[in-house]
Length: 444
Image (cartoon, rainbow, N blue to C red; front, side, top):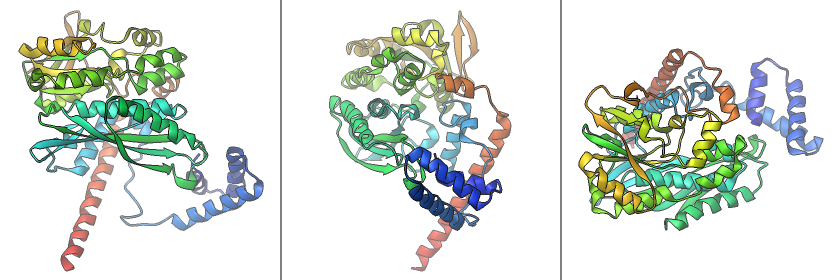
């Protein structure tokens, strides 16, 4: 519970201060199980801070609101809204000197340094794993290492950021860190730095955990999505999922499936491939996470300006059997959910050798599609006929709550226009403040 937001909403609704104070005091007692004196004083302090900080104007205190909520636009849900929002972030950042920048919507960024490429990436833990900190740490670490490997880089270090709400048990930090270092030590990648904070400081009650893990790697051969070319084929490994599948299993009554997600298959496949000469024939790699294969194939086609065709018949054996069985029982589209498989794009004449090398690590791999010239799009072949394979508004609903959330959707085009307006306002603010800073610097 965000007590600051609670007070701001009450004031906006026109409630009187004594009424707000009593209501907030009762909530604090209920959440913290504390005495009336402490809760009353705390509530009074929150109200005073809100009054002091509201109605401030100017670039540093206000922003152009889109009138579109994160959830209703699907931000973080790996679908059309999420992809659109991320492209606005890329517009705000603008063109940079990076070898692979955020505008390319790749798994990580890259800069050139000392004759090599330095790769940096960061992944947020799955929000629904707050009560399972070890799983949260394990899966987010494996995710950030995947994003490093698929850029063609050898990971050299990890960093983490952990936020626990005010009432959370300190042990969550430790269990989360144990999950991170389990993967790090297994792959010989050290965790070297990080940050530990409370969510919202004193203003958020509860025990919610959130955080991220990032990685830095070094490469001499980039395998970014933009290198995808007509004539290439797509190869994919078997996937058992990570944080998303673990979450689906826990909250849908299949906890036994979680163990299938605890593996290093993806990372070991990449390690084995990168030690082989055929690695340098690989054009691009990615992990099947962003809204499943639907999302990743679409993003690759957009970035590379090519047409990508996926053959559904080749996909049948590439989802771990226990995971596939669970998804089928829950009626979750396996093509629209993160299964954490390795997807490789390479010339057709290198496909057999790449598959042989990857299989030598104990991981199955099959050719699942190909790339051709044409309109940038992804299509699915079903019984030899092409079907639309573009991402949906959100990834496949993989928990009971998500199934409900998917039933309440606003007009997407209307929301897009408002989001675009807000992103343009952010760009203009950036330019104003930057120009003023540079003027100040010149006067010194």
